[in-house]
Length: 216
Image 1 (cartoon, rainbow, N blue to C red):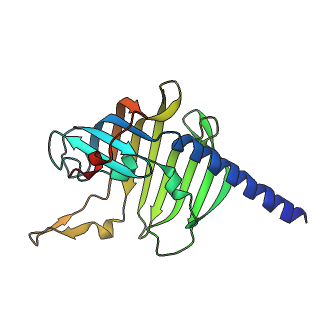
Image 2 (image 1 turned 30 degrees about the vertical axis):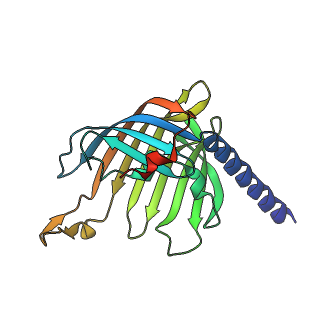
């Protein structure tokens, strides 16, 4: 009975935490934001990029840039991070204590895939219990790859906690770093690197027509 009660209590804690995070992200129905993107990847030279991003719930994203296709390598959905999509029946969730991001003590929430066919098998989310936002996310896709994204936040319009800065860091096994160019020449894929995004000039919940997301 004691074990059952403890398990039930743990499950209720997980549900409350997930619901609080959902409410935080769902209060933002749409926004536009300017992005400055810096890429630091071994063997690649990519100039700093400046983009404008349009986002609308649940998962509509559109980019505008001076140089066409300049953002082809960027984690498109990651730039408009919305963890609500992760909290579905495809994952089991459990709280595993606490961890810190900078000076912020966070709740450690682990998501485990219920099927081995999912690309992301394990995610570790560090949740800020005051703002109810994700401060850090560690992803473990298949084949030994890892990716970590760390977020800083700003309170936009004195109400909406939205990313002010995000740093993506990734690495992959060296044995899988070779690929084939469309011209049939082989080249080495980067095994590690980082992408830093600075967000500025948010316009939140002003309304964005669906036609914006139909553009190529």
